[in-house]
Image (tube, rainbow, N blue to C red; front, side, top):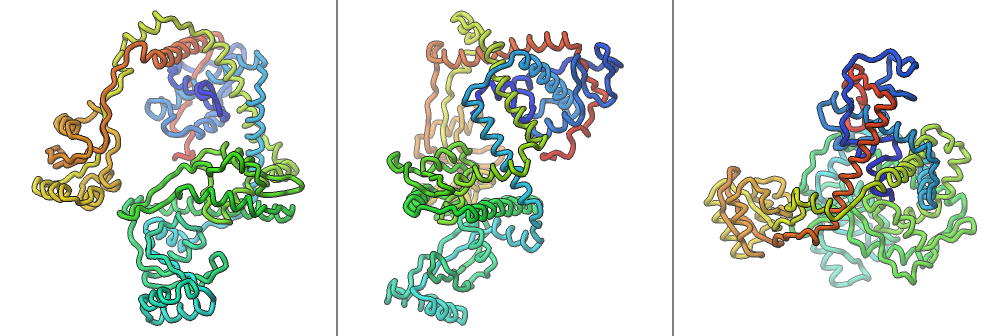
Length: 588
């Protein structure tokens, strides 16, 4: 992982550091000079300094790598002018860094090597997915149906194929399901097994199965499918709109579908290469790994009471005992892939980017990501993809980022002088900053009329579900979709002081209200309460020192940059900075 100072000074994509985002651009509205220290200034240059320029192409590349919340403050033009200045700052600091010839640590070299390997693999997969066709309007419509509804389904698995085909024919010609249930009750598993109808979201099940289900009509029985080698029919009772409805734009759905197709193409490429290299799986290890994955909650689920989809974007690593990490899961070209290697590989991947593993095919695909990484890298290098200029530049920027880490430590952090007197002076400016406000966690229902609020409050006192009442009645859309859940509320942050006082006075687990607000009448339930905490200087000293070091580092770096700007005769040509710079980027 990059250190905190790397986030403050650099990134791998030639972005300015977060710290530099706080430094104002130097005033430079004067007319552009014709020359900088004897060198002619190109008409297209956005900035010039002794030893270099900033051009629109460089600006655009760096601007596109920002997310909107990282844009410098100000209107469109002012923000871009500041960003030009930050690019200059970065260039000047990089020039200082190169004078010092820093030697990276083994850990930093390893991270650069891993990143380079990942970039080469990505370049190879870019070739693999280049000619994948876009989804048709009909496919987008089907996908939109999946994303905007829940299916109430039931699986019936038969003992043999003849019985499955026979009963499917009987069901589609009008035989009631009660007759099927009676046969299952009488003959048991020798005839068939069936679960109960349940709500599912398309994300919970494999794409091929979701496509089958969402193409069916309510009351319809599917063809006979083979699941785990057993004949199975799927029964669809109905489709229900999702309580949490996100507006489905065709453009966004098309992007999501293309992403799925890209993922499938990459998975297929790995599988084909694995077959070519005679990769084999070890059954015991694979089954052990799959069982561990199935102990994790699914990424997408449906609340059985409310029918509300539940999303868990972050997927933890599967729980594996240390004694089992040596079990093999795959073998390729004499190399053995163990569960331990699998966990190390996926441990380096952010939890939100890990694949969900719920069946044999997905665990095999996840194992192949580990087993085939070296082979895919070999293929990419053999094709010369490691020589691509953009890839080489990106790796070099990463190396520079680590060098900036060392520079920041040696030339900025190490020069911060901390004394107890300085910390006490800093703390005295705002001691309340280090206290914790009292807080509560609650559920609310917002209603239009007092009589309605009184009626619902009486029903809640008699045992009605708060979540169901909120979803059905609350006028506050954001909390209604969550069953009325508000989350953490801190004392002194609410505009309606009367409502805040009443809620904070309510005991944990108790109902409160109704309370009149500008939006309507509010009733609530308090779920948890945390008292205020006042910290002394001694109790807050660690946090005080952290903030003081950050502030002093900012000051030292700012002084260093001011000196570099002055010595380099920096000029920012604001008249050349327009709203067209960085246009048509990923966030436009």
